[in-house]
Every structure is written in structure tokens, then in C-alpha cells.
Image (cartoon, rainbow, N blue to C red):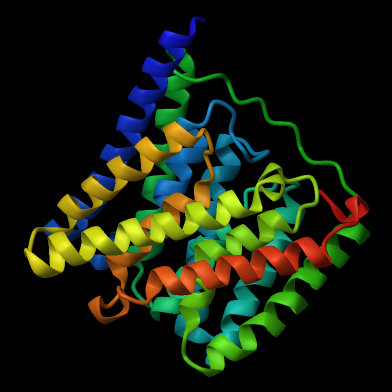
Length: 313
């Protein structure tokens, strides 16, 4: 396939991703159900649709099941597990590590799907239902893209790893995360550890991750995505009172053009782009700085503490 055709197909896939985010927010505003807005959907479209090669070792059935069960577990924790916020988040983090190990996959976006309702205090069943529906749409469109040769076929090979080492890895991840989270949670500044940043931290804890080779690019990309989301939310939605779906449409176009130019498809950047859509407007000015600091700290710590390839998946 020639370069020109590949570029054209990639643009088409990006348009599908932009339309997916637009439709999600449009339906949320039309219905008045803000729980429909799921920032990780932008990360899923980057990984499952836009990237030439899916970055996760998983198949369509696992995507559907894992997104559904993770989002449901997060809401169940909010509704029925009355413990401090930091312990709720750690419980969700541990649960996602358990099911990822059980199903032999590295589909880490479920971490954000599970933790986000805890951050927002979401008790509505609309959230897991909407996540499940959107996960189904993701895999259907991915199947259609593969069938009509708009993207390469994703072949799933279960990850092979030593269960004992894998358990040790997740326990270490949980302990390190809990220690990092103590100060921002105590200070009620939880978005220094926004859910997509926790996904990034888990990705960087893999010594063989390609993202680890470009840490400053990733920190800059996450900061740029957060700034872009906040800038357009503030200017278009807060200042000019445009609908949120116009904000999302504009921000996604800017991010996807940027990803195409720099040739880095890092899914958590898509999720961090949409977090400002669900934030209180008073947090928009500080959120990009929190993301920048949080990304830098998590990147440094993960590269320092997770070096042994024996602990890798």
C-alpha cells in the first residue's frame, strides 16, 4: 500500500474518532445525562481505530467485557463501599490489575474506566451502561475497518508471564501509587493523579514500553492535550457559551492533527483531552499545570522503580 493511500486512510480513521467523541457529548447534552461522557473513549479510538497497530494485546470480546466490568465495579464501589476516597481508588486499581492478570491482557484503559466514577462520585447506572454501549461501538467499527481494509487486522495472542512475578508487579504498582497519592488526596488535589495519568503510570511501569523511550515527548503531549481541552472548554463553552460538543469537536481536531504530525499515538493523551469537559470550570486554569507536574512525577518514579524486565508482562 503506497504512502499517500495510508495517509488518506489514517485521516479517515481520525475523522471516525472525532465523530465518536462528538456524538458522545452531543447525546449527553441532548439527554441531560452527563454520566454518558466517558473521556477514555477518545483513548480507545486512538488505540483501536487510528493507530496502525493496536497498542494492547487484547481481542474484541475482552475489550467489551473488561470495559463493562471495570465501569460497573467503579460505580459499585461508590455506591456500596463507604471508605475514604484514596482507599476506594486503590481498591479499583487492585481490581483492574487482578482481572487483567486473569485474562492475560494489558488492556490498561480499564483502569481509568474503573477509577473515574470514584473521582466523580458517580452512582448512576447510566455510566456503566454508556461505557458498555460505547465499547460495543468501538469493536464493531474496528471490525468494519478491518473487514474493509481501513486498518490492519488485530491478531490477539494472550500474554505469557509468570503469575507470581505478575502479582508482585501489581502489588508494587499499588503500593507505589498509594504512597504517591497520599499528599494530593490529603490536599484534595486529586487531579494531579487524573485517571489517564494513572494509566500512563501503569504503561511506564512496563520496562519494554515504547513510551518509556520518549518520556519528555509524552509529558509534553499529555500537558498539551490537557491545555487544549481546557483552553477550548474555557473559550468556547464558558466564555462564549457554545455547546460542549462544539468544544469537543474543536479540541479533538487539534489533538488528532498534532498526533498525525508528531507520529506519536499515545492513547492516554486522548483521555486527558476530554477530562476538562467534565471538570468544574473553576479548575480549568490549574488542570494543565497539575497534569504536567503529575505526568513528570509519575514518569520519573516509574522509570526509577520499574527497571527489571523480569517483572514485565
